[in-house]
Length: 605
Image 1 (cartoon, rainbow, N blue to C red):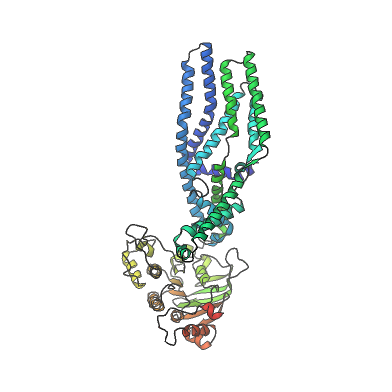
Image 2 (image 1 turned 60 degrees about the horizontal axis):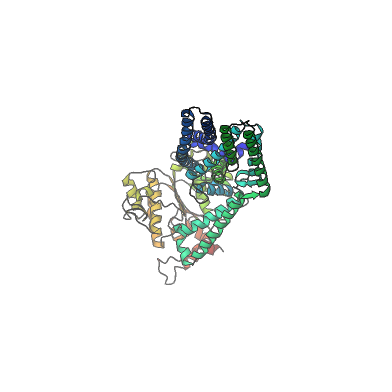
């Protein structure tokens, strides 16, 4: 029984409060209990006051008691609301910390691609945004109101026991029966079902399409504004319908509920009147017990309400993230120093790899490749061949499903992860664009200004902007830059890392938004700056690829050709076919800076 209770979302929610702020949570509970007891205390105070008037006793004491209780009733409500708002804010902050830790903390990325985890993250990150209910700063007050009402009803029932033992059982039982007869699933049913969570994820995506800048161009160009709005409305209406169905009042029998409560109240009040008429109960006692009987009705209207259901679901989602981000996103911690590595080679030995949730779809299959330290390797192949995956494995964002990656004969999993990542730098196709000053975009963790400027110069972005200029027009003094300029900034970030000690450079389509001449110029600069590094380049432009020391052709997760440009041309295999097809587009009166090319997918088709 206790175990089942601890597993309920409501229990988890209340358990989180003291983690967020123990003193504030204690004050919130103390005031909640006091507020719950005060209505019953006021009934007693009024009975004492009436009794004193009736019997001619001094009124100072009863009046003072009634006055204190009355003032406390008026004062504690706003005080409790302020405490609840602060506690809600603290709890939201605590949960955001846990959410951030669960998402960004694991050194690997596998957990971010888990479908169930993604749904929980959607629920969790929206809990304080008002998208699916009020923020916690408001929800805590609603929750307190329901609990205060329930406690007031129970306290009144206890007072009623002073009249007759059966009265609170009869009256309290009748009002409690309404929770079953008119059952609210916010109490009895977990609203956070797979169906609701899936609907919330779809609604969130439709919303992001409507309000985020990356999709704005295509939405307008293709006339999709109405489509996006309709999709958002449809998904949000479906979400609200599912949430309503999960929390609506499920009427067993309204008529039965009315009959039960009316009958119980008639019996209790008839007994009170009979006791007064028979001289067994004073007028003061009647006032006290009649008020207590009325107060007991609050049992029916208090308790675990919809606000708790709305707040408990995201709290439970956040708490689920921690354990579930372990195996998928956690990577074994090695302790072998990575200083100066690789000094000899990087070697892939019989590597198999599949992304989480796609175990039957290996991206790499029995993959073998040796990359001598200090050389440059270009990787080509059709989309899905595993080019970007190799870079991710080398960054140790994932571990191979089987096989190993060795750095100078040491399994990459045995190296100190943090130390190894200081030795690696990369530019991915989907590189990050910080809405921060240029300085922080090039060196987020800090670097001397002269190093930053040298890296920008090497990337061809020396005159782009001042180091203190924010790269977004959404900020005072900020500026926007083009896609090609962003790529140069991303390259500068990698080159800055090289100047700070990185020895492995991974370039995954680093200049896709530059024209052919711009890419050739940049790659010449990169090779010059990384002569002492192990450089791995993924590109579909063979005018750039041919400048690498060796070229690797991937197909279906395996190496099918490996050699220098001249060796592969002489081999007359896959590489020669791709190179010739792409070169044809630049022949016969075509300008040399024409950026139309044959993609490797087209060549290999």
